[in-house]
Image 1: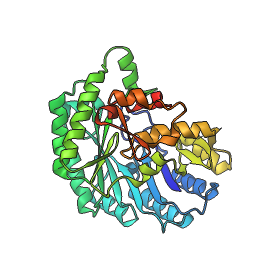
Image 2: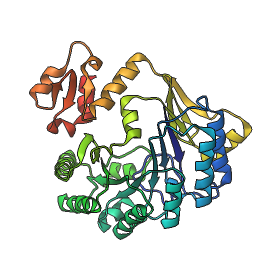
Image 3: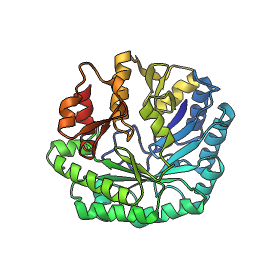
Image 4: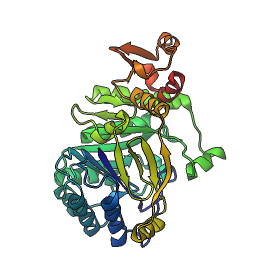
Length: 361
């Protein structure tokens, strides 16, 4: 079992992000934190002992020190956290100082995912980020000074206007910092985002050849720097793979708390009401906060497991494939191979993970 908390507040709304989020307004307050804790108290899995905890968003590090302490101590009072092997907090470089970083570490977080996206001024400007490359570097060092020995950097590639030289500069800077983990995400145009609107108007381009080229550039460079390419978008020093995300990819159950969070428990999946003010009111009134409830069929679970596990370096078990086995043509094209009862993407196939999963389904 794994625990996820969604903190939807962002100081600035990035135009490419499709997650539920908004500026804090007057909602990043004690009532919001108390609603999260009340949801934890009344959840069907109350009393469970999670193996990982993940604060995502949004920007969890935007919470004030007092609210972070109330939330983290409150969780410890409601769940058995003795088995937690990894506690991650997502952070924006512009939202914490040394005191807040030390507080997060003291309260139990042992891993930070730092949302850098780029160190390059023109790329940061295109992405609408609210920090500079220099601030991102300083934030990384602040986390080290606070005692974090497991740090991840989020980077993005195939941004309109970003060429191989700019992408290499980002990779070089990331490697120079020496994080234990790097996530490198291909920009996608998500529903209900400003970027999708601009793309549909022809103001922002998409280029599959650029996607593949920059993907392989990152894979080759980070591999040569000692990082294991253990999932399509994720690289880690040996032993520092994200336990929480690996749980998702393996199909483990997880409980999501907070507005917009998704849960999957016992074959049932639902989303928590994606409206912060309505969520807080519903919790206080004892009303239902679960929406989009669905029961996953065996076929749903098979297709999801195939798609998710194919993205990992271990690949997907052959028994997840339909009959007749569709591997032949994909092996001939050099996109997949069979290893010890599993189908594994080749170097060429990794850049085509999603369409290949569709072909195997």
